[in-house]
Image (cartoon, rainbow, N blue to C red):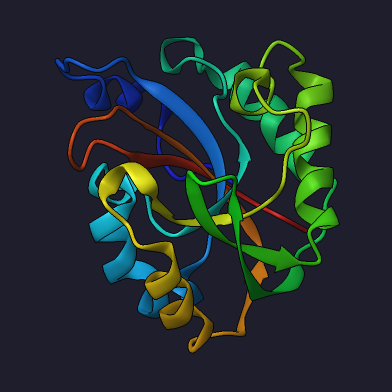
Length: 189
């Protein structure tokens, strides 16, 4: 389902020092009360305007190349999937760099990613830098001065968080404050 007209998309591409990118994400509104403050402190994406989410595919098609064909193809791929419930119940981390919460079941998110990559093999998750892509909701990055032990204890007290994946948002933005915006929402059947 389209939420914005494609010809209005150009309004989002103002002058910026950072390159514009796009991402397909499942927003997790139910997690916001538990993680918003922590993300504002320790996750740069929060300052860029990205809500609590589980990434389906990043980076996606360059914003300048997003057109009606890309939107239609994305809608067709995602339209094959049904909405599903999931639970955020485990705090984990990628090495020493990223603190995250993993969803259960994770395989439903992985299936969304795999289907999109099958359609756009040139857009590998995270640019292909990870051998395994683990669905997750990022809470903090060590580069932001985070103490993972303290944050982990705080987040664990808020778990589990129950949510539903019923839509995937196409967002565009840069590494500038409040630059990320949803330009399209694709509802799962």
